[in-house]
Amino acid sequence: MKTYARRTLGLILAGLILTGATGCDRTEKSGAAASAPAVAARADGAERYALTGEVLSVNEAGKAITVRHDEVKGLMPAMTMDFAVSGGDVRVLKAGQHIRAELVREKNGDSRLEKIWPDDQATNAAIAAGARGLREDTMTKGKAAYREMGEAIPNFTLLDQEGRVITSGRFRGKTVMLNFIFTRCPFVDKCPAATLKMMAAQKQVKAAALPNIELISITLDPAYDTPGILKEYAAVRGIDPANFSFLTGPEGAIRDLLTQFGVVAEFEGDLLKHSLATLLIDPTGKIIHRADGSGWEPEEFVAKMKK
Ligand SMILES: [Cu+2]
Image 1 (cartoon, protein in one colour):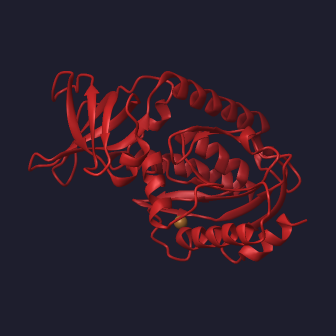
Image 2: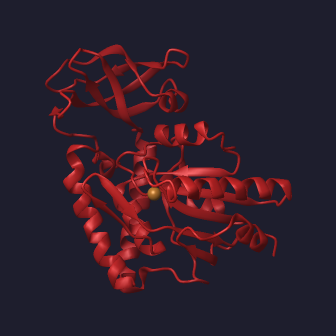
């Protein structure tokens, strides 16, 4: 199993590189200034440019932001202008925030920002340090990287659906139910079903008034699942964000987490095929329950939370 997982994880990397034409792979550069190619034309005729800048204001009703951006190589000099953004992004972004994004220009001249990530120094430094630590830990452990029942989960530093830096230490002292999903998952019986079960568990926890329970879903597809995309995913499902976080981050860090949690994910063309694992982690960070696949019930996890 471990050997298979490790080999397949190599394929994820290959898959991510192969699909680079349709996905943004700049999340890897959290610690450095984005210096992606100036323009990438797509099959639909839209052009994509790397953009960095500062958000000056957010127009939530109009789903637009005003950005003082740096030079956009191959397109325009530094200036201040408005851009359309998604409903999730407009709710995550704040005036004064530094961002990096892709400026998408349609054939008809319409333009918008996608793949929006926080880009301030403190965030970049924290995320990069977390990814480095996870890399070292995964490399050092080698074949023993897979965390068995009773073992502690690895430390991680990721971004939540608000674009905030979240470290694993934040969940010490809490019982955590954790799984992996991605927002574009087309298999109704996989991620969408897993999210419904997580939501059901959250409701049962609330009904039973169980204290100190957190739910976490980490994305399998960080090239697409930005904080804004995750925010939208949670919002359209009416998920209470009080104790349910959706996390994303650099692809390297996600790959290392998949290795350590024993989740297999592999692109076949544009399709991300993956296994499912749901874990329960005790307040000291140890794994106390694990369900592979989708044949688990929220009740079984909630019962173990009560112990
Ligand atoms: Cu899925």
